[in-house]
Amino acid sequence: MNTRTLETRKYILGIDQGTTSTKALVIDQGGTILGSSSPERFGIEASYPQPGWVEFDPDRILDTVHQSAQAAVRNAGISFTEIAGIGLANQGETVIAFDGASGRPICPAISWQDRRSEEITQRWRTGGMEETIFATTGLRLDIGECPRGTRASGSRAIALWNKRCLVTLATDRRTSVHH
Image (cartoon, rainbow, N blue to C red):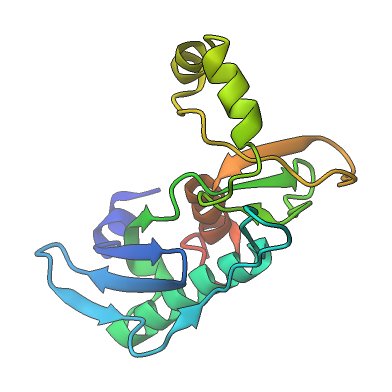
């Protein structure tokens, strides 16, 4: 990337991907808000397939991230090629399993609110595994699992939403800063 290209990228895209909706805004170097996705609302809905289970459609979440980012950039009157960086606040520990080769989700996103792994994590806690797991992963014991019977071709991967959303924003032609 040459110096001229860096000079033209002077805005920050901020995205708040929450439990009920996604919002975005564009700010300049002085912190002034140039545009936001408001008043448009990009809502998501949880599903509750069993008591204690809380899931989201991962494609819907990503769609709302793209839609809110596009609205904020459009309302700011700029293009994605002028974005210097992206900040993302999201659902914290919501996770998704996806096919490592295709990048496609292989099951619903498991919400940070989900309690299906409570029994397993309690066994790990009482077995003295909590600190080892935290030291290894940086995460406290509060994880879910994909539903049984889930299949994927190629390798599988699990990612927190912030990584998945940022990678998708950077590589999708609708929002990529590389075109």
